[in-house]
Amino acid sequence: MDYRYATKEYNNENMARVVGRSLPISTKKSVEVCNFIRNKTTSQAKEILQRVINKKQAIPFRIYTKDLGHKRGIGPGRYPKNVAIEINNLIEAVEANAQFKGLNTSDLQIKHICAHMASRPWRYGRKRRRKAKRTSIEIIVEEKKAKEGKEKAQRKKGKENKK
View 1 (cartoon, rainbow, N blue to C red):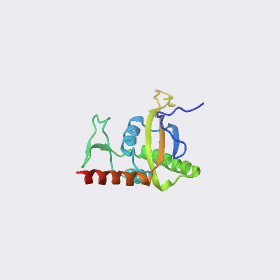
View 2 (view 1 turned 60 degrees about the horizontal axis):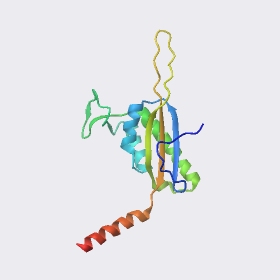
View 3 (view 1 turned 180 degrees about the vertical axis):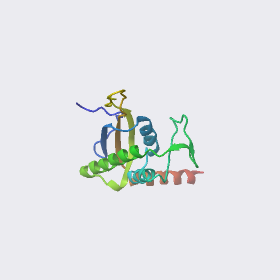
C-alpha cells in the first residue's frame, strides 16, 4: 500500500525522504520536537537531539503545555528522550537515502517534518487494558543551494545602493 505524504512539494532531483511508521512514542511530544527542528540542517538537528537525550537541552513545548513546569530561559519544556532517539534514527536514515541518491549530505535542510497519530492497538493485560501510543513521522530533506545565499546578498546590496 502506498504512503501518502502530507506535502505535495517533493522534487526527486534534490530531495530525499523517509517515513517511520507506528513508532512506539507519544504523538504530542513528537509534534513538539518536530516543530522545534523544522527548517534546521540535519547536523544541527542531530546535535540538538543528542543534547536532549543527554538532558542538556530541553525542548520548548508550545502547544501541549497543560500542567507543565518551566525550564530556565525557554518557558514550558521537557526532555523527550524516547522521541529524540527515534527521530535521530530517522534523520540518519534520510541522510543515507540522500547519499544513495547522490546528494551532498553536509548541506541537507529539513524541509518537511511532521508527526501523525498511528494505530492504537490494545496493550496486553489481564485485569485492565490500555491503548499503546503509536506515531508515524515523515521527514523530507532538501539539499541547500549555495547560490541562494549569494543571490540574496546581491539583492540586499542592490537595495542599499538604490537608497
